[in-house]
Length: 353
Image (tube, rainbow, N blue to C red; front, side, top):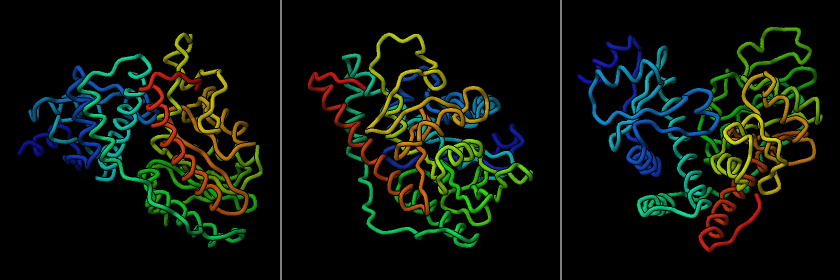
């Protein structure tokens, strides 16, 4: 009856109310308990799509409707998340996944920040210890993807589908957190906006690189970044995802006095790197602060580039073996680096980021 009233109050087609799997449930419950009614993550997903994460302490349908008229989801502490879709249930799933991602990044970012500030209270430390025990190791991957050259449309599409699926299956990203492209001659095959990386069949657009067609209208919102990367590097394959610890470390900075604080995602002028991978500012889109203006040059001489609070781009010449292995290894290295920094801070060691 409660959800029926919410649906009626919003005039929506679908609703999702579910408790996240661990460690997300413990993370979200902690953040909800320690917030003042709203959680404010600083990752790109939140800045672009969610804005903030409101909390309802009760399952009052009137209050939930009021919140969901302004936001895409609401957190019910210790009970779960409520999200909705205006057109399809898929929209509710995307929002649900985005909230889980945003809270994961905030939780681990806040803990590292608290250590840098010299104080972590007992409750935070207890929650952190619980969550760390729940983290699964990345599954080993010793195989190969389809080998290039990807010299036909059929081969290119098969390789893209395989690389996208393996990126999700290896727990590097959730289904909707990334995009992929492959150049074949003067055509760029790129995943559509809102498509699922592990289900790309029928969701890849052929976009003429000379702009002679409007087929790119349904392509990924990062089409211009992909085109810029190809022009700058001469690569033929691009894999982009939002792996969690790469994003977390991109936001970790020990510079105490900075006039760009709070605008790091678009205005950071420092030359930063994580595990040897450049970190650059940039937001989704083609504006003056668009990542299409920062990523192409930065990735030219590196295995990848991390966009602040957003995600990781990797490239290849002939196929997706190198982009996938680089994405896998960079994220694995970032996770190990995160816990190294935690250990160093706990023992009083300081280091430059």
